[in-house]
Length: 440
Image 1 (cartoon, rainbow, N blue to C red):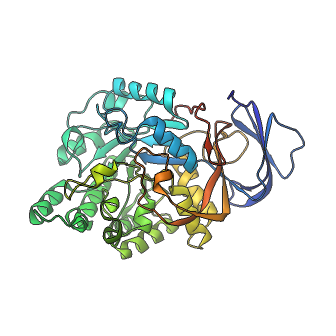
Image 2 (cartoon, rainbow, N blue to C red; image 1 turned 180 degrees about the vertical axis):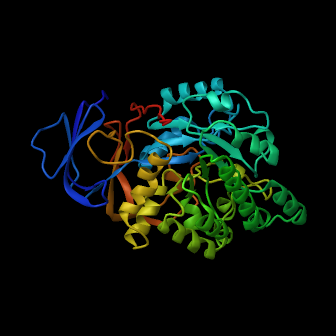
Image 3 (tube, rainbow, N blue to C red; image 1 turned 60 degrees about the vertical axis):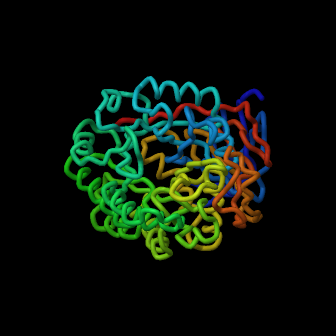
C-alpha cells in the first residue's frame, strides 16, 4: 500500500493537549497533523469515520526487550512491532541486552538497519553500560540514553560495583536509566533460599529491600553529579515513598501495568507467567504505586515487554526466565482502569505518550495538535473483550493477563500518517522511522 499523502479522521472524540475532548476532525498531510477542528471542510485522499471512537496520541513504550539480534526464537523486531501496532504503540525504546550487546556504535547501527527493514512502528534504542567505559557510551547516536543494570543481570551488562557506577554518572550528560536492584542483597537471598523451587520465592529473593537500596544509590549519584536519571519499572512502595521525599526535578520514574495490577497472589494462578524482574510485590505495594502515579511522583508507564517461549516458562524455578509480554495489552489495561474510575483517559494518554516524549526529548510526539507527527490510535471505550494469548501478535503467544476482560482496544493505529492497523488487520508494508532525541 502506497503512503497516503492526506488522511482525514472524521467525528472522533479527540483528546486535546489541554486534557479536554473535542468531537471533531483531524487533518493529516504527509505524516503531520495540520488541523484539528470541530468540522474540516476539505476532503482527504483517505477518510476514516471514527464516530463513537476516541482518538489518542499513539503510545510511546519507553522500555521493551524485542530480542533481536540473537534471541529471535523468543521475539524479533517484526513480530514485536506487529504487536505494537495492534496495541496502539506507535513508538518504542528498546534495551541493549541482545546478542551481541548494544554497547557500540556498530551494534547500534545494526539494530537501526534491522528496524528500518522490519519495524511497522517508530523505534529508538538504548546503549548499555559496562564496567569498561567504552567510548561509544558517550558518543553513539542516536540513543535514548544509557542503560545500567544495577542487579538481576549477569555478564558484561551487570554493573554492581559502586565505583564503576560512579564512573558512569561522573562522565557526560546523557540520560541514565537504571534497573534498580541491589545484586549483593540478591546474592545473599539466593543463598538463603537455595533449593526452593516454589515460584513465589522469586519475590522474596529479589525483595523490596534490594530494590530500595539500588534506587537510593542511583538517586544519591544523580544528586552528586546533577545527572539526568530515570528509574525503570519502579516496583515497591518503599521506593515510591523515598522518591516522594527525595526525588529532584531532573529525576523521573516509571511503573509497569503489571506492577500496578498484579501482585504476589498471581503466582498461585499463573505460575511462572507472573515471574519478572523486578518481581511482583504485595497488594499494598500496588496501592502505593498507584497513588504515586496519580500524584506525579511516578512520571509515566512502560511495559518492560520481555517475552519468552512457553517451553522456557514451563521449566522449574529457578530455571524459569523472568519477563512477560506487554505491548499488545498495556493500553487496554490502563484504559479499562480509567473507565472504572481509577484514573482518567487523559491521564492514561499523558502517562503513556505525552510525558514519555517530554522525558526523552522526542520532538513532535505525544500530542494531537498541528505540527505534531500523526502517530495516533483510535480506541473503542464501549466494547469489552478478553485477552487471548494465542491471538497475540507477539511470537511468544501468551499473556499474563489471559482472560482479563478489557475495553479500549485499538481499532485503528496510525504511524506517520499511515494506517498500520485497522479492524483487526495489519498492513505489514508500513514502516516506522528512527526516533530522534533532542539534546538541548
